[in-house]
Length: 272
Ligand code: KIV
Image (cartoon, rainbow, N blue to C red; front, top):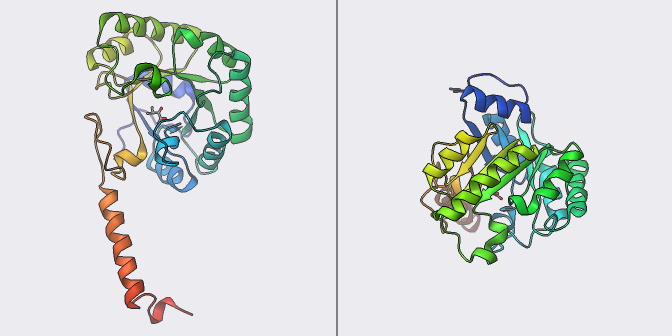
């Protein structure tokens, strides 16, 4: 059953702003490969985020910092080849835009040219305003990312809820307005109090997509491995698991191993 207020053949940045205006929530998930992206797109997702969380869930790094621009382009181009409807948004990885707006533009252009994605996402507020502006002048749509920004993990030291204190909340509200003014088409808001997130979403006309930011925002995003229950060790309060794929897959692999070792697989019908 679709709960969409309007059917879109293709999701664009304009559709997303229109969804916010119409009060339709935006559904976003991460994906990093062709097969998964095809399933997610066919299910009707609005945005696939080729997140730098690939560094964690695909490559096994502890943080998002090690993933490279070339690796992001590889993941993004695999996703782009799979999709027919959704918008493909790609994270600019750590080190590809901070502190150098010319480099930021070059990185964004490489993503757009080499992967065929539709937009890029950058973490930060006023400190990266120049990079965002420069990318936007090239006609590349930009989504901002405020609150918990995992690329700055060593600055903050923990992955706990952000902007609980008044001064940080004030800066976050200011940054959200700035990102809208610069021309971003949306903002991801990660792990901030629900009341603050709702206030931010109400204060701007571009969609706010939350992760651990409550229900008062314009859409939600989850990391696909987490919502499918493939990552057992990651259990934040905001995560709803829709499957327990870890257990399902573990069972399937065990059955396969048993069948191979017992000589049950392949049987007469499974050979030539
Ligand atoms: O990289 C990622 O998956 C993200 C989401 C957590 C928003 O940025």
